[in-house]
Each structure stands twice: as structure tokens, then as C-alpha cells.
Amino acid sequence: MVKISDLKVGQALKSEFDSLTRDLLKQYAKASGDTNPIHVNDAVAEAAGLKGVIAHGLFSFGFITKLFEDFLEHGKYGKIIEFEVEMRGMVRVGDKLVTEATIEKIAGKRVFFNVKQTSFTNVDIKDKNSTIVKQFEAGERGYISEKDIARGLIKTKEVEEGTLTYRERVATPGTAIIELYD
Image: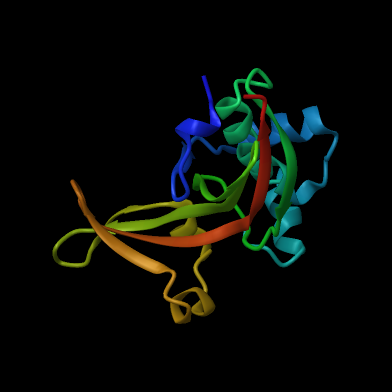
């Protein structure tokens, strides 16, 4: 049960999704009716100046609404009043999406959130001699740009196989307001 009295400023909701595949984008295109080929056909996406297919903006946005719908148990404890988001970064096949909503303010029965959806794009894994032991699509297709490097979006972390290089960027920042029934 979700109650205003149980919520605090600074509290966060979070979800992760890491199963973004070409097949899933094709299914989404069919279900949504958005059959723009930049979402399902690499050759067309490349001809449009992209380095491969990109996820539909509303596909990614769906994970933001899902976070709140799950929290509210699909209308059982409240309703979504408003979303305001800015789709800034492309989401690609293989990305992990992390959606976070942090309570900024509580006023009456309304809860105001800052929303941030971050995409994590794996590039490669290198061993201790800097030899690539595994390369992901982002590395193969050159998804990482000089701009990403200049902005400090490229990061590394140690994993079992060696050092993972990945890009971490906010794809969709925004705000949301929900209203609880209790």
C-alpha cells in the first residue's frame, strides 16, 4: 500500500531494464505502429547518419511510465497527473536503461519527482594487457564519439573478464507528478 505518510523527500524509485534487442524493437514497431525504419533496419539508420538502429523515444519513455504504474499498482493507490521529459540521448540495442524518480516535494496528496533515465552502453572489455577480449556492438559500430569522451561520459570498471569500457549518459531527464488517493 502506498501512503503519503510513508514517503519522504529524497526517497527514490528505481528500475532497470537490460534486455534491449533488435527483435524487441521490431515487436514494438509493430505494436505501436511506428514503423520508421531507423528503429529496425541498420542500413536505413546508417543512411540517415546514425551508426545503427535506435530505440523509439516512446519505447524508452514507457519505462518511466511503467515505474510509476508499478509503484501505484496500476491505479490502485493513485494516478499519474503529469510528466514532462526531454528525450536527449539515443538508446541503442544492448543498452541497459536505469530509470530513477526521486521525490522532490510532497504537497497535500501530490508527490513531485525529478526523473532521470540513464543509458549504459557497453563498448568492450580489455584484459590487463589492453587487449580486447570482448567487443560489444557499440565498439564494433563506433557508437562512442569524441563528444562523449570530451563530456566525460566514457567510464571503466573492473569486471570478471577484465576492464569494461562503457558510456553512461542521461538519455531522458524530466519531472513527474502523481496524486495518491490516501
